[in-house]
Length: 333
Ligand code: EPU
Image 1: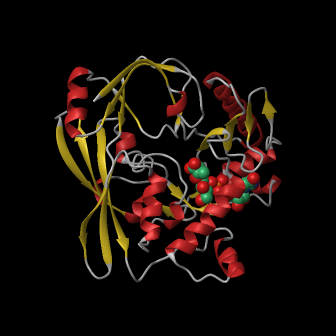
Image 2: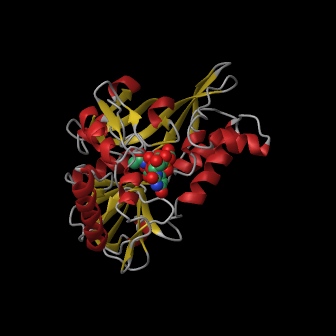
Image 3: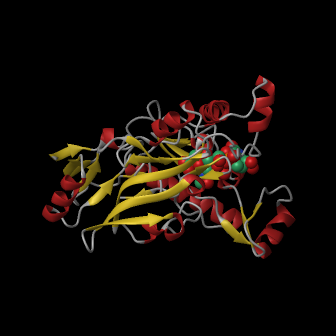
């Protein structure tokens, strides 16, 4: 266990915000985590720092799980169950799977963040969510200090949502087990231009080819946090009632929408923000990304408050024009 005091969190958050934490503990195994919990019962877990916006100094002790390792739990002719420790980098786990021709997570290539954080918001992209390949995870229940196992059906997975998110930090995820296909894969290539790009390259559908195409799409639209601080989608795509959609379509007949249920439709927040003429908008050190308006960026030395005020401004503009309240996907600390 390593303990740092008054440490800058700049390297620990993908927005690159320079805020300090009073205490940061790095735990490399379960024993470390339990020890940290005993000494600091109120601690918060810091994952890959790709879904937080730091607006003030962090007084609550932070726990960073650094435990790595990917192991085969079991395997048969058609499937393999891989267990990855929480401290693994998600995109490296995807590359590990793709390299071995294991199918199921190729659409989730290049999503930043740690493996331990992936189930919390049920990460998703290009028609696939973590839950599709998720088998189970191990976690420590802070109330009982016991290790518990959650299977897919226990996790209450929803769009960018899960039991772990709903229970607000009660469970500290130790590892995630994925169930992946070895031979007969079930690819999802209907989203956007995945299929078109595969055809253009003359590539058959394999985990490696799909992963490469997804990486190409992402790199052409989304900023790399190493070059430009950001935390991926800042807002969730809002879900509105069918009546609301019908009334908006009178003014915006081309409004894109995706079926959610008989009574609800999902609207791309990117479209709403772009319609408010905010795509590429910049104010001082912060801005709305020119390639994907759902992403807010730090051009250099922005503070968390700068980004938060831009987010509030965007919410206000979208509310005024569409009467839709955009909900932040990022957690504000
Ligand atoms: N759109 C615009 N203008 C743009 C971009 C998009 O109007 O500049 C509209 C278009 O109608 C487009 C639609 O938004 O068809 C959807 O765009 P896109 O495929 O880029 O996806 P998204 O809904 O904006 C979601 C995820 C992303 C994920 C992509 C691809 C959320 C909050 N975001 O974005 O996730 O990569 O789909 O599957 O659901 C992340 O969570 O950090 C993230 C980047």
